[in-house]
Length: 357
Image 1 (cartoon, rainbow, N blue to C red):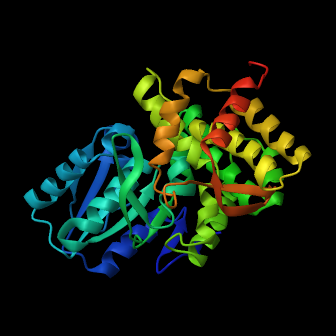
Image 2: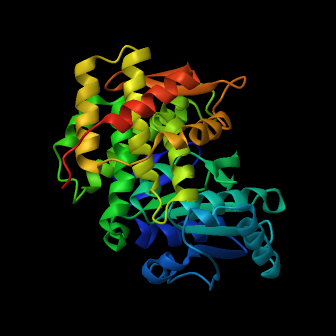
C-alpha cells in the first residue's frame, strides 16, 4: 500500500520522507517552488521542510485560503511571482495544500512558459482522494466552478495520512463525501465498508482504496470523454449549490457538503430516470442525510440554481447533463435532465426531514 501507478506518474502513500528527496534529485531541476495558502504555510510547510534535507532552498509562493482564491487574479499573481523569481522551464512547482492549491497550482504550472513540471502534496482529505488525482487543473470565474482549466498530469502525488491531523472535523467530512461517492458510482462493497467504519478516524486503507477507485476510472478515460463522467455524480446540482452558497451565505457550504446535497437530489433523479431501486435510494438518502444534515434553502433560489446549472461545463448542446445511479456501485452517464426534473429534485430535497443532532 505504498504506491499506485497512474497516467505516467506515481501516487505515493506515506513516503514523503525519502520519496520527495529522491524525486527532486532524479529530476535535476534548476529551481523549485512551493505553493501554499496561509493555513498550510503554518501547519504543513514545516513538516514538508523536514523532509527536504538533501535539496537546495526553495522559493515560497503563498495565496489566501478559500475558494475565492481560485481565480484568474490569483493565478496572475502566481505567474508574476514565478517571473520575479526567474523560474525557467526546468523548474518544479510543489503544490502543498488542499484542492484550491492543487487546482490553481496545477493550472498556473501547466500554462507558465507553456508548462513546467509540478507535483501535488495534498493536505486535506478532499484533495487526497479527489482534487490531486486525475490531472484536472482549473480556476473559477464568477463562481462557476473550474470553468477554465486544463488536463495536465502532475509528475507525482505524495499523500501523507499525517496531514489529516491538522484538519478540523468539518473538513474531514467534506473529503469523506467524495469517498462515499466513489463507492456509490463504482463499488457497492466499498460503500458498505464506509458506512460501517469509524468515520471520525478514517484509516489509511480506506483512503488508499478510494484513490484506487478514482485512479482506475481516470486511467480508463483521462480526458472525460466517457467513463470518467461517472465521477460527476452529485456535482451538477452540488456545484450549483456550492456556488449559490458562496455568493449568499456568511458561512458557505464546503465542497463536500454541497456535493452531498447534490448526491441526494441526483439519487432521487436516479430513481426517477435511471432505474435505481427505491430501497437503494432510501438507503443512500437516509445515510447521507443522517450523517451530514440538510442545507436549508427556499424556492426563491431555484431560478438562480437553474441558471448556474445551465452554464455547467458538463452540459451538451445547451442541455443539462447528469450522471445517475442505476444501482449502488453502478453509474450511467449522459442523462439529460430538464429544468422541471431538476427543480423537482430540489423540491424533494427541501421536503426531507431529518433528526438534528
